[in-house]
Length: 149
Image (tube, rainbow, N blue to C red; front, side):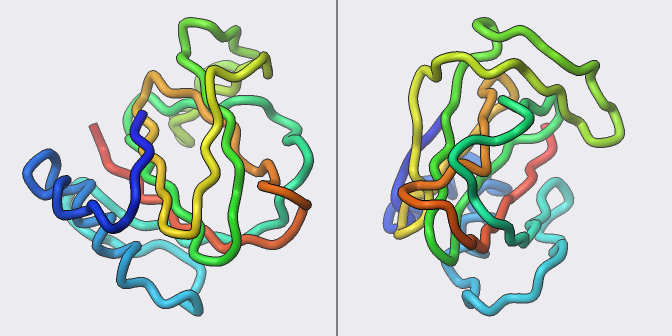
């Protein structure tokens, strides 16, 4: 897992061009960008979504086998607890179509608050629990970069 500032995105150009393309998209995105999917590279796309954050989510942690998630809120903030998969017990079967397995919620190994220049990168071994409010429940607009691995 990576937690970093958008001011450091040039560092990622040499590490992974698909993650870098996603970070450039995030940095240049207008907060009024339309909801939906935006292709970026052969391996990466951006998904723009909005929803109401909550005190807790109803599904626990999620993890993906075939994508890296780069997550950033372009309107407001979201708190995302995270944990390594080895600590967790799945409560759903792997859904190949959605590339997701959901895991029971336990004490996280850490949390990140995304938005206000801070983004997070979740690798396949990084289970993450989105939808949590940073302070109070409320509206967020978020960009998730999906990078195929």
